[in-house]
Image (cartoon, rainbow, N blue to C red; front, side):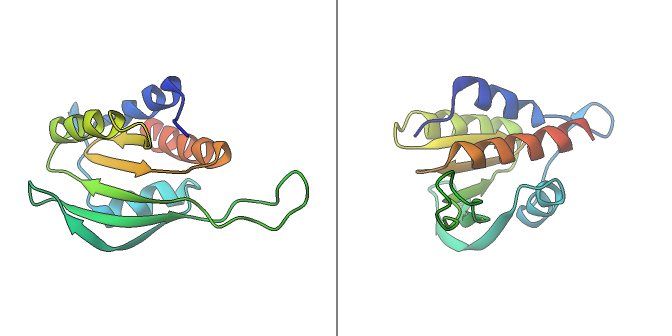
Length: 137
């Protein structure tokens, strides 16, 4: 399932101003802490591999979804991967690579790229709201 184009465009503005007009640069832990404070519910996992440029790819999992409309039990949250790159330009390049794979739903915030193979619309919305909150804060 792909994120609607407007959703990716909505998340990209997290290239936001940090300090004097520059872009923010996150560490994995700082990024997760900040978006979780806004309700993202991301759990940071172990390093699952290192890409060709030496960037660690970390496992992530979203918090479980609420009850389905039919009242079925909550589903485990989406699993995905997070890359924390050196700068926003490298993250933009990674986002382009990610979005070229039809199976991935990809998000970018400053120097961080998240990718998921299966993500519910409710989870996309939760991420969007958390990213918007830190972009405006």
